[in-house]
Image 1: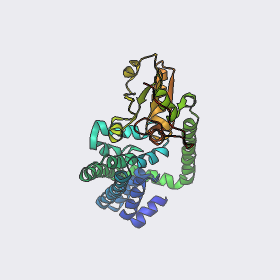
Image 2: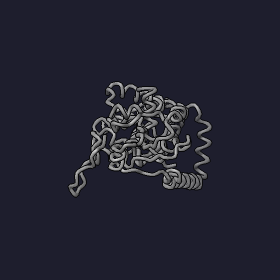
Image 3: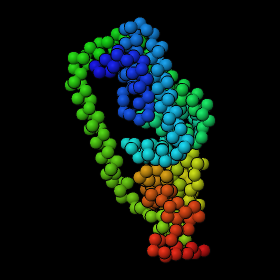
Image 4: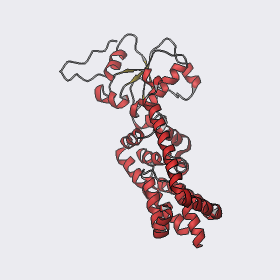
Length: 321
């Protein structure tokens, strides 16, 4: 019952701090806390207006901080967030696709989707969305989330009071069981991510090796697995073809006799690996993933596609016509 004690002691200030901390990335149970705040407001007959404003401002401030980070540091912030995500294959890409389809309205719905709400704000900054637009849509999403959470507590005060009484009596055992289940789920997600046999079986090719292969008489077909939004933000490999790898029919139209190299710009080459998996399911066997993705390509090869000299001073391999 620590949350109830905290809310009774500090009121809207505690709620502001909890929502702000969750918005900036701490794993806090904001929805249950909002419901509890609404139930306490009903008990005290306060109406919950102060609680709604506090929760909205906490979310808005946390999102504004991420927006500024994204605006100043671009995709580096997104890569950091994606690196610690349990689902890197859908992490940034799904957020980008949502922005492509829905525009700023993504900021409204993002507040209701775990994980997405943390990525939407820095991505909005990274694409230089106007500050007024960001504050309007992100603020609307924060307000709706606060109203629904606290309003739910106000409307369902009686059932929640019974639930609180049960938690008071069985709180330690219930918390321990929930913690165990969460840890088991976490281990399972990590294990499946760390030891994905299909992903491990896909061959990798280094940027230098790809540059040499592209200069050969039979170059591979390079496929850009990034979203349209990512391609608009940064140039890719000049010879690459952008594909919609979520469209199975477009993948089947690729020439069967060619070899393929997929690449992306996300941690662990997650989107490139996902595209390679879909190609293999479509019947393509000669598929490789560019190790290190677009970042390593620019470091070792450069935007022109000419491999940088080795540290020993040897000249780069000459391209053949």
